[in-house]
Length: 171
Image 1 (cartoon, one colour):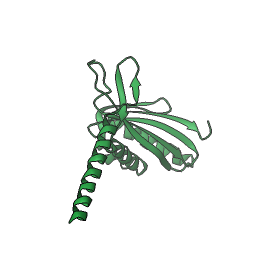
Image 2 (image 1 turned 135 degrees about the vertical axis):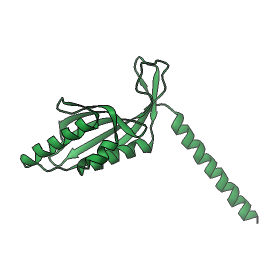
Image 3 (image 1 turned 180 degrees about the horizontal axis):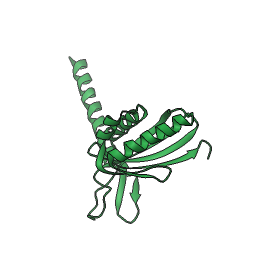
Image 4 (image 1 turned 30 degrees about the horizontal axis):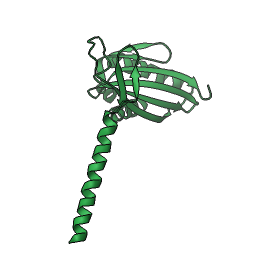
């Protein structure tokens, strides 16, 4: 009986310590936003999961799923300077890219190298628009060794803002 009691107490202690550590991680900030007084902390897996769904729909040209993951008033900045507004323009731009790439004999394929999310603290300034969602940074490598650095702003499970930059493999 003594062993069961000690085992049970040890288990309760371990679980409570894990919960305390997790809470500390969620509340700690490790960055700042210049001129706003806002701080940055680690975001959630849910936002990263949305980006994974976007990527999967994109590579498979599943435009209906992709549209469902994009806010109707989203602003999306492509690496070549184009800007798409909303899911319809965005999916048309992607399909145009697909057609152009296949006509040039390029393979429609890439790998997501990493993704992580951050959250910006609430602001007292009503003009700040960056505090109701989470930012996800992701890097992709294409089969032709081009690197894409992308930021996704996810609000309520949908893409609100996106920006992409492209560079060569060793630049």
